[in-house]
Length: 282
Length: 322
Image 1 (cartoon, chains in turn cyan, yellow):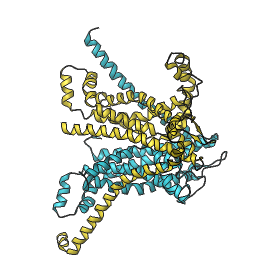
Image 2 (cartoon, helix red, strand yellow; image 1 turned 90 degrees about the horizontal axis):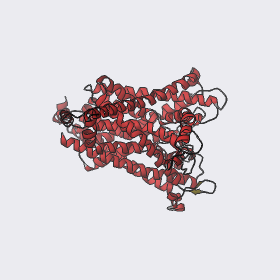
Image 3 (tube, one colour; image 1 turned 30 degrees about the vertical axis):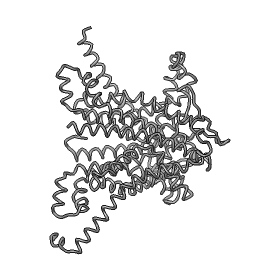
Image 4 (cartoon, helix red, strand yellow; image 1 turned 120 degrees about the horizontal axis):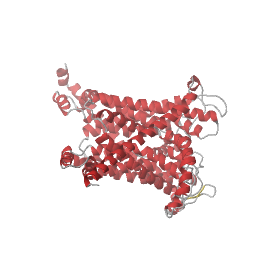
């Protein structure tokens, strides 16, 4: 075999394998989604949205868990996102070139990829131990701590996309920086900021580990922020590992609901980015 | 109107006040990021203190984990964490690398975006979903079809044979590593693809001009140019694998022991915490679990920090070469 054919062969082989690698990745996504649909759809009925989580052996739904998940995710975003956006604003505008900002940026990146169970332990020590009991509030704070670094990052990135000329024009008109930021920069970066929020929501709504020992779980309907609150991820965790068929069925249905909500959120967020940045640079 | 207002001294003072308030608010929020990291470190250390004080360095070197006699050592959990993450990376690196090549060099334009998004969605699937999928779908398949084959064919081999002996449990270290690998793939492929795109076209074109094949351009131009960035991406994936909780908790079997076989159940730091924390009684047991958390924090913090530093260095070089 000539050296030339050998090189060609190696090329085809390597590129072929890269195609195989992609097929493997797509296969697992399809396999997981298929399992969820196959096992989850069977239990999908109006009952799921009307009834509370049942004791083993009797019929029930997921209403309290769905409510708890939405409530705690919203609270987490309401606490975490404003702080994250302000911090992102500092990094992109006021403190753009300072040394401290470089450190903050670095620490934020570390927090961004820190294990979520660590956040759970932290909030347990911070709130659950001091208050003496598990609570929905502690769960929301844990989610907020996970959402915050995400919004810091996306806010900074999005504000950096706003052309300097626009800011200069505003400054030349005599506007103070805060006015320029709130009236010019934020509106210009709006769709990017919305994307950041959506990604943060998608990130925290499936989190289980930080809720395990903060919000815990609650078999009953509860809107009390100072008491344990049911939520989909922890319910899925408990029910899936239980020996009861009706609990397992509810776990699959919950898994289906939560996964597809998150996938829809993630896709919507990407569409918003694509529209913001039609040149195609992700 | 605005011009008139701007001359009004009271208005100007109001503007200055708001400027000061807004500016301080953003600054305080940014400082909060630092305070948060410091707070996490301090509180974990505080919670872990009783365990560290009781067991001293023995906490790191002992395999025992017995809530009844209150003897706790982290070795089995640390071992499980390191081994599962290592195997996961071994499996995920070639696949993630291949996906990045496919997306940057091979895929036709219309295919790039949908395939790229699909791979990214793999990262958006919550970890608990990987957990139940791993337990109810992957583990039975491994137990019935893959592990018996491994025990028959790999088990008798010298040296590596020990890794594949014992009964096929389905769940265990190997299954956990596989699930972790699937979860880490999108991270590695995303970072690798991003750093691949920082390679200047001129470099690639000159290699093509000399008659290099696509694979030779990738292996001899793109990979050497982006090595730091790729290592950064791999470390990020490692950080994720080390701290991953729910998926592992479902499939690892939660046994505090170091088995020589990969097919046997084990545990990881995060799985031990998730499994036992709620039922642990206050005192030494809880403190030992928090101490495990502090160890995990230390390990992942170092890994992620190194990854970020490598990525930052690559970014700087890409900036200066433009």
